[in-house]
Amino acid sequence: MKQDMIVVLDLGSTRNTDVARAIRALGVYSEICNFDVTKDEILALPNVRGIVANGGPNDVVDGVKIGLSDEVKATGLPIYTFDYLENGVKNDMPEEDKDIAEALRSFVFDTCKAQPNWNVENFIADQIELIRRQVGDKKVLLALSGGVDSSVVAALLLKAIGNQLTCVHVNHGLLRKGEAEQVVSVFKDELNANLVYVDASERFLTKLENIADPEEKRKIIGAEFIRVFEEEARKLDGIEFLAQGTIYPDIVESGTKTAKVVKSHHNVGGLPEDLQFDLVEPLKMLFKDEVRACGTALGLPHSMVFRQPFPGPGLGVRCLGAITRDRLEALRESDAILREEFDKNGLADKVWQYFTIIPDFKSVGVRDNARCFDWPVIIRAVNTVDAMTAEVPELPWEVLQKITRRILAEVPAVNRVCLDMSPKPTATIEWE
Image (cartoon, one colour):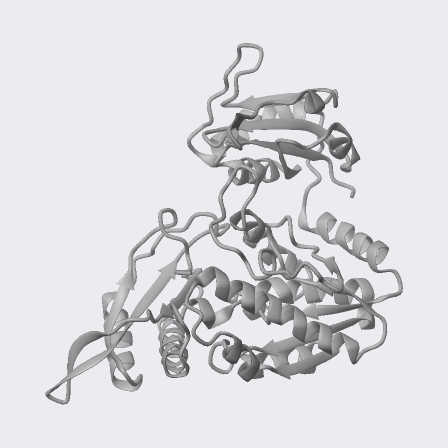
């Protein structure tokens, strides 16, 4: 790695990602380490210039108050403390991210002598070198959903190892309308990738029957994905690696030593213990906006790089509770209407993510002058930079009315349309 690095030491802060992003905004690479990291582990990281000790309210782990360890002090690296009492000095966490960057500027450049050489081009060059070193002449299987993250991984791997890469696109029956066809067209026809298409929709939906708990659904979907890849790998020669589009928010939300699980991501919390592959995850330390910048630098089309995010478990975590085929189809159709109307009205590039949700309950309504008992559709639209926080944008009332009319008229067994106005936090972007 060519970039200098500042380590953000998690001493119980709720704002580790804010500090890491602020340092990267200064042009210096940063990584977050757990409070119990050893001296040797820190010094084994490339080009570490200093440590930011980041304290906060989650500073009691297993009943013991954590602090700056002798191991960390023994590295001999400069240490800056946020909200942490050290040598009688307490530095309070600034309220705004830009203030964090300004507070750290002198420490990063004057004290640590770090160079502002963190940029997308250097990151890509480093990752290509690391991928080649890790993979050698072996073959890699990529879990290609067609979303932003896996698409950028595909582009990186194609640049690094070319035809050693085989992309597998699994239709788990939980994709958006027309999505599987689009993925095959783009990657096989336009990018000339080695692409294997697997329709496993019946297999997944059967496994998910009567499963209502969202964590259990995610883990079933994650484990079944791996099994499908293992089966496909056995049909190929020399596959030893599995590539994934894991990004940093996936890891944070799946739980750290000082933070509780928000939700297990299928590519983090759902991996089976007997995984048959070594993992290749070149984006796992990037935030979503950094992933998009990487995709642009790699020459991917704008429509692919800036398409809205789609969770690995797909519509499975938007068809709330136990998934039923009829409710899943209603969800797919309502989502297609929402996306079509956002496209028509110029909202697709202004709203970061938008989708529909159908919960597992019904309400009384009136259809054709008679009582009906049907599902509600919930519209969710948010804007965010890094997926760690999110706000609900103002949407034109007439567009919302048009979407509502169309959903109620065109989607069977739906009698209400609701708008989710909740920011993150306290809500998450997805409902499950």
